[in-house]
Image 1 (cartoon, helix red, strand yellow):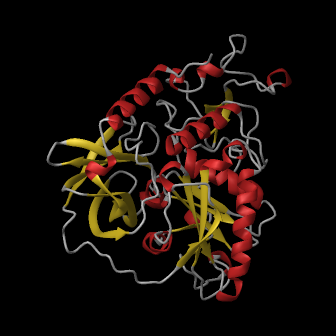
Image 2 (cartoon, helix red, strand yellow):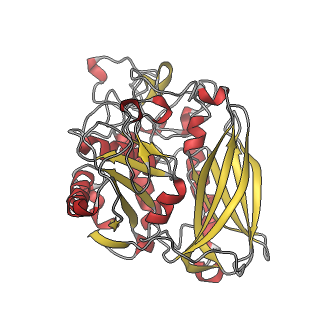
Length: 426
């Protein structure tokens, strides 16, 4: 029998103990409170500033696993009940701003990004604490905001009127992984195409393990939100489209990186369905996509590699899986310092390998593991990953997180994804 690494076991034990003390109905209503804020800084420093609060009608998350037990993501937020001083909700996440901080541009200027956190709508006043991780990946408190749920400045208005439709529904949002699919660059005349693309998305996702074995634990809904123009922005080609959530290729000047900085428009559209994960489907043939853990994911749905993009990017957004490739150009610099253990579950610097997949490595496998035919189908520690060839290691010779290969998640990635599915559904 395989056992959890001790650090993960302790984290799960503590989170389960705390969650067991929290009765959802004692602290929360069955709807969402959305907190928008601005994240400002450069490559060396950052600051937070409050924007606004919005009430949204659905809560798509678990009502049992309220405390995050995964030590993933660059950022953490914690919701504390002011009456009892009890931690009642927490999540880890990453953002586009956090990635931007590792680019060359961040060395030259200061920039602001709109960001959002969501949590169940509290019944009493709470304090929301925001944490960044320092260079040693230790949480450092940076900001807090007091939320009075009776504050009449909490917005309930909805600037747009959208509707949702079912793609696949398996059950109550509280015990399913809820994915909301947001259309980008589909005009009014192309909404039927978007609906077909939603079906294609579901087919791609559930054609791949471990999602295939867990299909009955997922809900997928699409939002009918047409764009004025078809397609998306391609700045290098002087192509600019009027679209609903303003995605663009050449994010961070990387041609295939297809993302949006228009966080508020994206969240407004997504709010028309209960969700744990946001996935943007873009009506374009150009190869591209992107994803950030617990932020959002993007796929170019008419690309010939869309099947692969759907599952690869969801690996990032849902499971905090790192890229295992090291030969492609990226905009980041020193994204994974080799003197600390990465947070992502599928790469290691061997600084703290006990916290990763050491329990899955057979005693006969050398660490590091030679990239030779005899270890092709073995879990090991292969050098090269996280965008660099040296000092960062991956668990398998090949994987969907390394190459353009479909239904090819390695055992370590499958385990990480299964744990995340269980977190949302058990």
